[in-house]
Picture: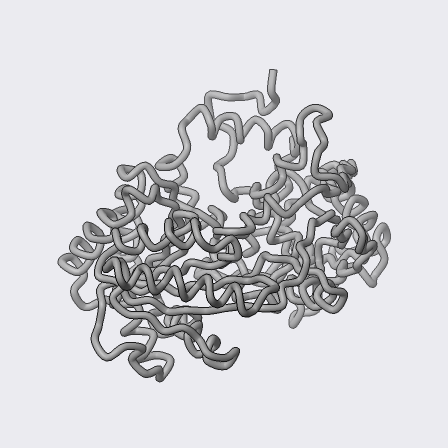
Length: 470
């Protein structure tokens, strides 16, 4: 047993420390393609107090630590680096308080998204964030990466669903910001520093989340359109006529074709179209909301915005329509090793970006598949390109795509984060002044540099000997 292992066991208890080979391997990486590496050991705190005590000890020892949630990240942020220990929050999954009058819930960071959804829906409430990884991803990780998902067009991103939180800083200080009200203008909203910061400033341990009344009715439709412009016009009409609109998923023809192949799905329409949109509404008035959806779509057909449409006639039919969009997991597996992109683009630039990149990548890499899809309502576009046996070729694709994103006025990550995989391209979305300030915040809150080091931003500049804000 090493001195580090002995010290941690003495201070935290053997129930919170594991160096079993199987456990280490289970915590050697997230869902990304970042090279797997087993940590020195795995810490499994049971309470927020355990987290603070562990961080205080690690800080004094100057021992680097990587924080892990459900390990569903796609940017390599939870994959251990050389010499790190891992801190898993999986055992911190308590639901502390459920305010059914005010519609808020207080939970520990290790609670899975699906556990939260199931718990509140049994009581007539609804947590609107939804991701394909719902069964594994954890609420703390959702907050640390500012997760998005399919319902942002109506409910916003994770940042919009958080009222309060508790954070353990690198030195073991506990920052309690457990606000439970929507209006709170009492100085700087410090929790915003930690949402989306990917764990480099502190470890989120508890959260206060706001809920919505549980919808009892959903309506789903798949639309075929002649152009991207038609999709933008349809989105405008749906927003105008459907307050219950919750999802607007955009898929180009190549994506639908690939989805049919990998998922064994039938062609949705008799003829192919350049663009497809999957629409969903969530509400409580079955007849009126369905009639409203059908009325908007009928008008769109008459006006030539939509070429054809299928409105789901049952929940099973709706699942069949969603199946085209939800083949992403299978496509990721089929196209490995792949370059997977999650970029944000102004709507005015998205069509030109897709046209340019499809032409550029097809000409440069004709043997690879290049698929485009995304959440049009929030400007989030996904691009999946692969397989690439040559890492140099994959890097070239990444550079080409991210440079084009910069030129279009977009951002290189809309919802998956920077982690380690996109770190070298961060300068294409953030100015030197912004990254310098991020670096100084990191130095102020984690002067020993132990917490999720070498993620998001590089270390202090060689010409900047001070990490603190003066």
